[in-house]
Length: 355
Image: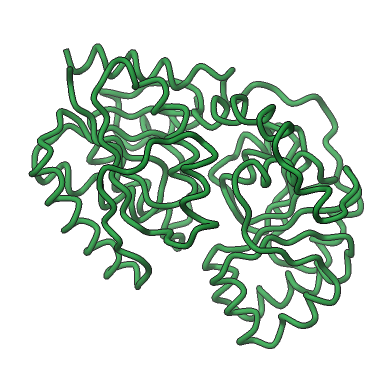
């Protein structure tokens, strides 16, 4: 049986790994490497527990740091694991520093590389994630694209061989988890929330949190809107307090700690609209049929905007408030991310490629 090493380290990686790991189970020996990019329980272990992902075979404990320090430490430690495990292929997911480190460690050791969620482009190279995506795609042997747009993006960069339009594994994962979430999550009751009686907001991206004027504009809009539930990333909380914005937000919005995947799905599906700068949350909003308001100037998930279910507002307070009050999708959404069979398709392609 061929051996695959799956490299993960942050919440978006875990969500993509879960359905694919189930599809790989009877076909491959899978070794899971957790870099430790997310390292507190709410952001990490709870996702393994809820999503039914096997415990990592290797936990590298890298933790936080500057991009260069974190990525360098990951490359070094992943390389040691790959030398020990001697896998036939390394699987990397999404666009995090973990993704980049896994790809570089593998390609330098001449181990076959596969990228799940290949071909995404925001065309904004100020985003660290955009650099990660481009580099990982250009050193991968197998590229699993969630959409036709992603395939075209790769073709425009001269990447044609090994490219597959598989659909999005996050659709698989969400379809699998949504009924479990409905039966197990009590988050709406615990927070005394009425379904469709609140807006949901998430802010974590550096372009917003590290720019005081942008962050203040978002906080002003959320404070003005009212009825906003805000699961707050630890780093975002630290910056809000440092800038003196925490108290205002705390008075006007319901700030909660980060939640597990099931609770997040229920918060998303129960909301009127979702305000976010997260790529994954944009996509979850679309799949769940919730109007999305994206606090960015661009998005890698262009299909959600083209389909009329997501609007880009940047951080302009008036634009945000207008979208909260007025934005409504004008048509039924389509299955632009596939129909929930991406994981099995990827597993079958891997089986053909490694035999």
